[in-house]
Picture 1 (cartoon, rainbow, N blue to C red):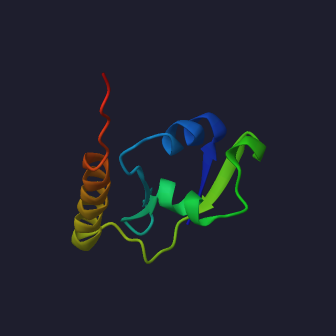
Picture 2: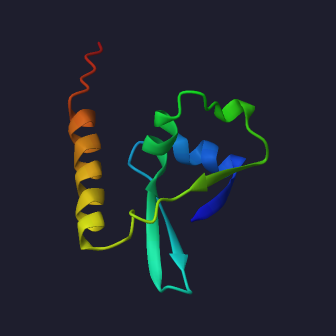
Length: 93
């Protein structure tokens, strides 16, 4: 399943601390599919948001169906980020 994302939206999404999950609904099959946006683009070593055009097309794997297991996975992603954020300590005078 393919989805076009406007560059300004993508820039904003990639700056989010918490996981941004893009969900696309397919009305013909009555199913929804998801993509962890920040993780998807981090894996693409040759991707630079400053070098893209007005839109970027992402392909969402059909195995990424929104279901109970996916919802649990989303919660785990959030928990992992929350745990990482808790480890940051700034001591300032």
